[in-house]
Image (tube, rainbow, N blue to C red; front, side, top):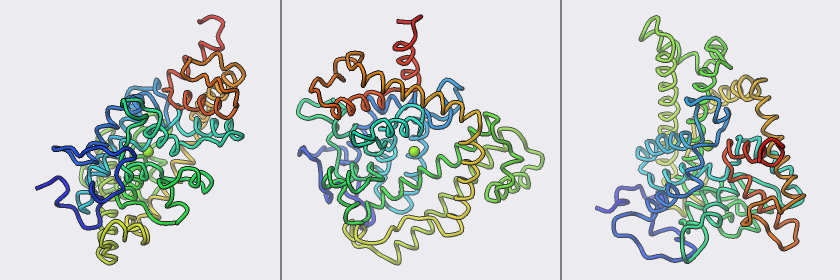
Length: 378
Ligand code: MG
């Protein structure tokens, strides 16, 4: 039995997609999507996820999530759900592990600042950058730049895209022009991402002391799980009570996604991936669960992501990214040789600077800023 024989008819398959940009022979012991996953794990951008953060800075504590552990949690949640729906687990795993490869240091603020800086040069968007990493920036092969991933993997990495960018990117972004769907595996990975960060941001928020259980009890969705734990283990407190609550929360979200999507798939019964592409999104939460998840997201935005201590980090981080960009644009000779464009075209130089900055880890960006602006350090 082959690695994809058990899949539902609407799952993505190695032999049914549009393949690789540079044709390669098949592999005896791995499916094409297993090979994609392996290429992603062996990439240097993947290793750097260990030192990139989302909410908290890397050096703020060893217990907080990094983009690496976040990506592993997305892969774990995504694969469990994919197996239940008989979707292609290997594609889900590849997408989960690749979905944050293009992120700048310091989470979303890094992207926002780089995008502002790049306004006259095509802007900056982390999804596009993730695709750029796997298509161009990784240099592992003699015959081509990038990792030469499967079409379905590349398309799934590109979660959002403006129409102008879609026209420039060609087939991989055609769905944004046609307004069609990506594979079910891509739809699923997006939601596994949401399940992962909603639950682990609560955990990290509590651990940091920026939010409290008392505050979270105002969120009905959390409060119901918290009460279940208190009923099962009266008087349980501290980390154990938090873990018990969060694992219930993940289970409730994942089970809802499986049940709601199973029903939609049974009803629509898409014959193959082409039918999936032409139809409506089929991987989704039920309406009540969507409402609960939205309430939780709203709570985290108001109380954690906009907490004044997080704001302080955000302002410092934005200054680092902006000042690095401005210094490199003014003096490209400060850049390592690979990133000096030399063509005299500002747009080309700006893109190389964006690639350089986006590739930095949090601590590398802090150090690079110090090396360039501090007189005490060389
Ligand atoms: Mg993510």
